[in-house]
Image 1 (cartoon, rainbow, N blue to C red):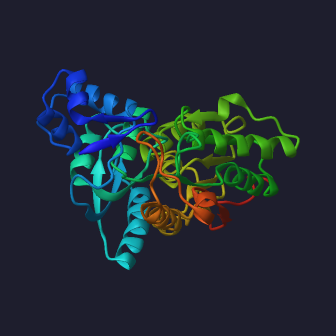
Image 2 (cartoon, helix red, strand yellow):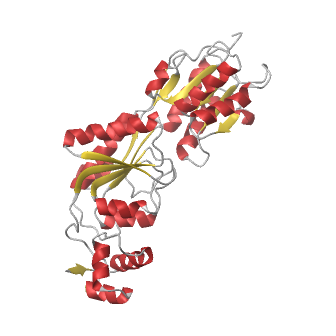
Image 3 (cartoon, rainbow, N blue to C red):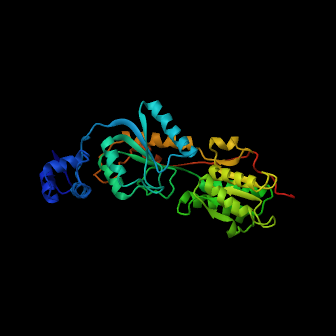
Length: 356
């Protein structure tokens, strides 16, 4: 076996010599074998990359599956994304495997070794991005990946599917302002996630357009889960009647459900005493009591598009040097960063403020 570089040729024996390992160890790294220490694997991979080694054929058979990777799987939001990927997988005759790992920013460090052994057709990741070393390893094995609903701002070489978070925050807040609300609170997601900040910016823009100044005391950062919505709402709504908000815009439906429960505990009626708007339009939103006004984020469609994008990348010609992203050809190249629109769904949890 031999490899190509921009300056000439180098044999795997030379790579082994430079790395101070045996030729069989280099072969194990190339084949994704687990019985190689992490430092040795990194050293060999770096030398292969530096020499421009190109794997002209797969070193292991591809598995006819799409891997979907989350940092958590315990939410209706996750289920909607899984359903979207499954819809496309069923159409194309492949299977779906789920992995839970890492934090909301990136997968766990040990995840990539497993995916290199599994060799799926591609990977859909629900994270903000991937560290450079993980991207290079996936590219070196010709395993495409797509980031869905990016929580950060993916680099230009990272295919991604997201939604119009700023516009969603704007629409939710405008609805409350048009009903007559002026003292509006916002409970968004983590402060280090772009989608949280974009929804908050939409809220602030709507307030500014209406000539209103948001009260900093009414802005809270949570984690998109029921508990954080409940805790922040108890604090916000525990203020005297004249100073507490008459409406709350929650950055997720789960947080909004927590707000509804806090209002119930405090004896406040929805929407007579307090209006609530959520975000996502997950199935439980229409069955809450009262039914939740929310911003519809097309989660299933976003996941379907991410899966289709992945399969397009899978079919693309990969003639790039190792450590570089696969480049889709033709029209596909313009379709690797897609943003879906959002829309307001008005139900029964919003009304004019008391006394209006």
